Image (cartoon, rainbow, N blue to C red; front, side):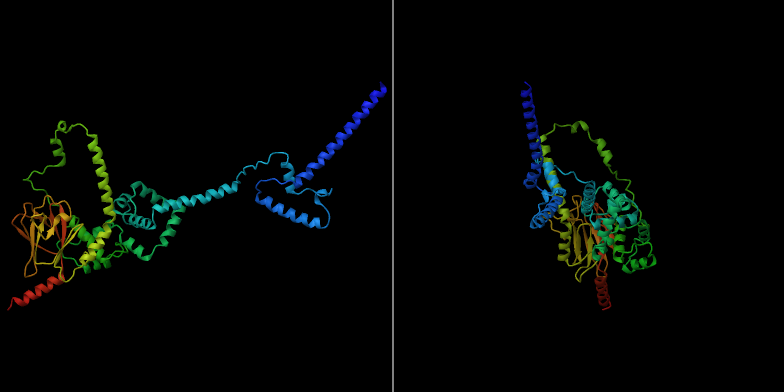
Length: 449
């Protein structure tokens, strides 16, 4: 029994020794296998640099006959440590977490993109127009109503843009840089569109409506008040704005004519009270409403297209007529200018009215606006031999000359810059002074003979 137990203990010791030897052998084998094993995964930039350095060092040491992996004193390289630590597990590349500095850099790079996107809708010309208009009027509501930007902005958008230009350093810096890059001609065109301030209109309103101011008058006004007028104002611009103020009775010596007391004028509220609401209640026709909405949308689209093409037609009209609004050629005696159309008077007598199939006239007032209240032959403008213009009313409704009514069968003398109002359509009558002076000189030569 004792001999049996001794043999068993010797067998167990031999087995334990073999296990230790195998464990030691297993401990050295993974190091050799991990250094030569090829793992198929993408390497990062730091691993690529370390692997290239390790290869160059193995080639240099392999030439001398010493293997770096078998040296007892040498430490394994970083690439070998990574391969040994990742060899037993499945090679799943971890998703690299972005560094905090990288996220900050991305946020900083995205911020200017939003600013430039905002600047894409607000052009540099719009910013310059906004700044000039606010400096002139000091009122954002007046700027929104009076300034025509490149895009249709709401009042809130105009307010937010102005506050951003004042208080946002990034937007204001980018806007200033973009405005500095504008062409000088573009800057001059933008400055010529600046709104008139109250001080400028007050000085212009002092020019009498009955006087005949010339360009020299407005040039003298500019010289006498250089601080009150905007730097881009010209005598021609002042004359055009004065004519507009006269047309709307905004001069100091003008007063709005009261309505006649004899004729009862029906207001909109009075007419609305007379309507019986019970007669207006009808059944809804959904098909008709749908057709009306489609037609309304189509008409609005056509109106928007025509508004966008309006400047092209204006250039075309100017090229055909061969004259701009305040200038004349050698054949034009006078001009009847409205808001939309300019009528040229090239003969000594012209007829005004509404053109129809059976009635052809010289000046069709329906081109200016709604003319259904105007007679087919409303009036006649004649040039006398002494150089005076007269208008005779031949229609049912009166013609107002500078606020004075000219009834049917009456006539009135027209002077330069006279405001002619026919059924809510207003025109300015401009006379070619040079050509009329020649006509008067010829008439003076003929009369003594």
